[in-house]
Length: 176
Image (cartoon, rainbow, N blue to C red; front, top):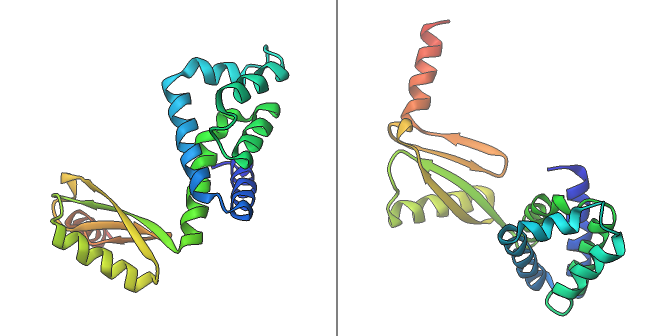
């Protein structure tokens, strides 16, 4: 994350919160990311310094006026004018974090050696919510190299209960 993308996200968040359009703005960011992913030529057009700024801004307005909240359209115009439209993905991620924080929600990255059952996932989620006092969405992944157990990244903390981690700790002690 760059400081610049964070500043755009904070400005967009504040404007959207003031307008009470946080959900619409999040949906608009998803739309923008989808369009720019599916049409890389459109991103190249919006980012090209060889094309006049007014033409690039008109291309944005023609495609999205009335489809995006005013705050998002305004921030996108500013990003294009300043040559920062390539920061959209980072800005959108930062905006999502700010919106989750405002709702008291967090995302935990959960990696296990085998897929977790619904009961295990629910128990883990409940434990995280109790520990951190926030609602959690779990993003689960499987990594067989963990051998067993679970590794959780949440709220800047890493809880590594994997067998791979325990073996690495034992190996470290033996080599000390």
